[in-house]
Amino acid sequence: MKAIEVTGSVDDKGQLSLDKPLTLAKHSRVRVIILVLEDEEGDDEFTESASESFRQGWHDVMTGNTIPVSQLWS
Image (cartoon, rainbow, N blue to C red):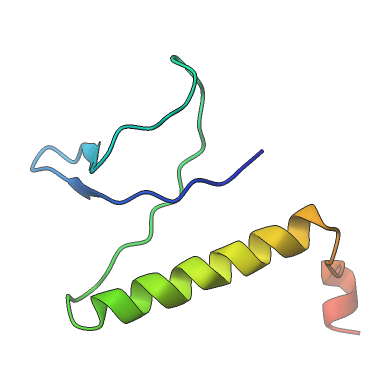
């Protein structure tokens, strides 16, 4: 599995519209995670920090740099 970050908007019918087309094989199944801004202030800062956090987390998972949940509260 790989991660692709894109931006988009939700229309008045609740449908997601991406700002740019995806460059994936047609009819591919995807998993979608949506990050919603609660206000427009700090939009750039939020996007950068959320993006970096996601990239780091994804890298950690893919390289096996994780800790079992059971060990977090030990």
